Image (cartoon, rainbow over all chains, first blue to last red; front, side, top):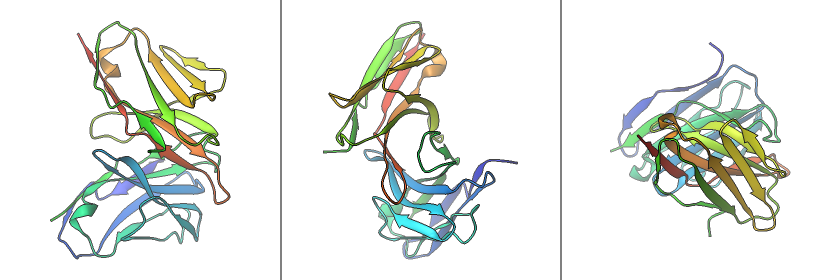
Length: 114
Length: 112
């Protein structure tokens, strides 16, 4: 089905483990984004990508790594998970770089680090 | 100071009433403005863009005041289904591409 999908929907991991959150979109949108949402902070940008092999840091990139070898995929890796990374993670994509069409978000991944 | 600030609410609204709330942004160079809606434990969804001259989409009216750096959302004839968190979003276009900055959201509860 067309759209933007995230996996897994829920994940519990232990402190210090590496975990990868997946994001896949079928529209061939150039721009993709990773946000985290926490109470009291709203949505904060972690990383974004303007095209395959082009990524850039957002507001809160520390502890995260991204890659974008294919236009449709934008995985987010927590290299060594910490409890402060417990959050809801949203992936989004955009048709253009001008935000005129807004972003389309995936359903989110709820990550708990214990 | 946060780039985008909103009253978190909640705004308790009787069904059928009108509710309005604002959002302020700090960067005068912000260029695009949006309202998103987020239902509990769901992803944000674009509600409407906000244009300089103000715009309506059914029962929803958005206004932009660049001089005072705020945008507003008005909901007329509130429905129970309007209960949600409304996110104010601004965009600042930079050389590496635009990014959206989200406010913390205003929670609206429409009650019978």
